[in-house]
Image (tube, rainbow, N blue to C red):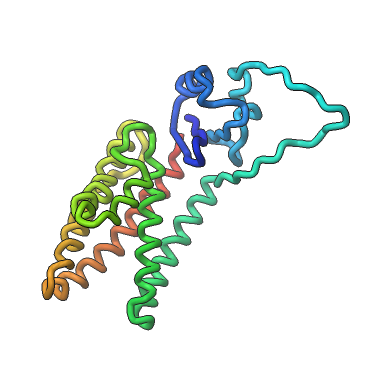
Length: 227
């Protein structure tokens, strides 16, 4: 299974026949960065086994020029992605704990990190069947009133789409129940109700921590089981 870069977004997994189709319609060209299992890092398609499927273009030679190509965009290896997710969760914890001594100020940072974890998870299931993109999943949560509905798409929707993704690709990953994510959404809405928020705040905090851990663990499992 292959992944390729399009507008700085990772797309895949796709089988080789699908990749050949994208090469035929020039969605993937020689300079497009691609990755598959066994590669240490992302490389241009022309530097991989896909080169044989690329149209042969004669390039003008420049006398004395023997400079290797330089690629400005650096793509992460699976190990780097896993480390990044673990670091995000660690800092989420630190900021959440720090809110006790910063009078809640670092809680804002913990929410930002929580949304980054959410964004990264949505990135991992973009195979053409996901209900939304990572940018919309997080961005629409900041639209007043609409976000009261969208929170159920961004969180329980992610769990359902991830389970469907696991089934489609026959990955050896345990599927999750969307109940925890749904409870998180309901408690978030209840916290908007005056006085009731005192009763639901602690429960929301506990569920958010568990949900963040589950999202982190699920994302790591997806990375480690890429085909």
